[in-house]
Length: 304
Ligand SMILES: C[S@@+](CC[C@H](N)C(=O)[O-])C[C@H]1O[C@@H](n2cnc3c(N)ncnc32)[C@H](O)[C@@H]1O
Image (tube, rainbow, N blue to C red; front, side):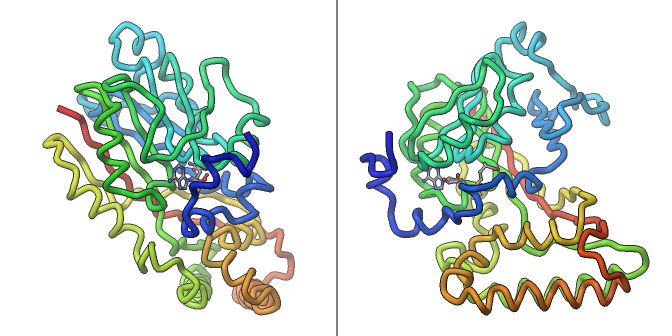
């Protein structure tokens, strides 16, 4: 299918707006997945990036690998909705017999296809609101930093349709206000970061409101499954060059909107923030490593 396929023709303006070129042309949002989301109560661990079992922290938390999963028959089929380049999709592969990533964007799926993937992973183009699966077929429906773009109520109904009884819905995302740590200068750096985020706020899609956490907590509230769990403070730290941090913020849809509207202002803003951060760090190289603190939230719910 090409970009002019009926699927893409159905994209609303809002949905089209949510595909910054950076998502399509690079893997720059790689850094935006948490190192691990452990959800052992739910009998699986979304152990993204590290792909190693986590130590059990409580008796009800357990780590399952594919062999155990097959035995228990509860890890047959996972669907990663809004899979983008597939960076999270592939990380489910060790835990499930079959994993399918779905996305509305053909360009994203083409990128996912070119990235290496285990043999039990495949991709399909589909809107989140009309998943191409039978009723009660899926063990895990997940969406990683994607559900805020969906028609949320329709997606919840659709996830409920495809999930098996006992199946799990797991949604995760992160807040825009990432923190920075560097020696004893963290406080000063965070003040500068706040300035960066505040400058981008007017360019945030009105559909998202000011707080994407609220979108997810509203979705959580509206999910009728009695067995559910919300966690809004799951912090993941990544050490990376200062310029990569700036590159991460540049992938935000609000920055991309500013870039489209006023490229010069977008460049001025990121140059200004880089200069201020370097000065506060008392270093000259933007390759100097800082620790980025990404604030994730997630929720899980089990279909009765
Ligand atoms: C920020 S990216 C996240 C991609 C991936 N989950 C990750 O964590 O890297 C959001 C993705 O949601 C997809 N998307 C947006 N609206 C969608 C919809 N209604 N149905 C399916 N996918 C959608 C976009 O195409 C994009 O690939």
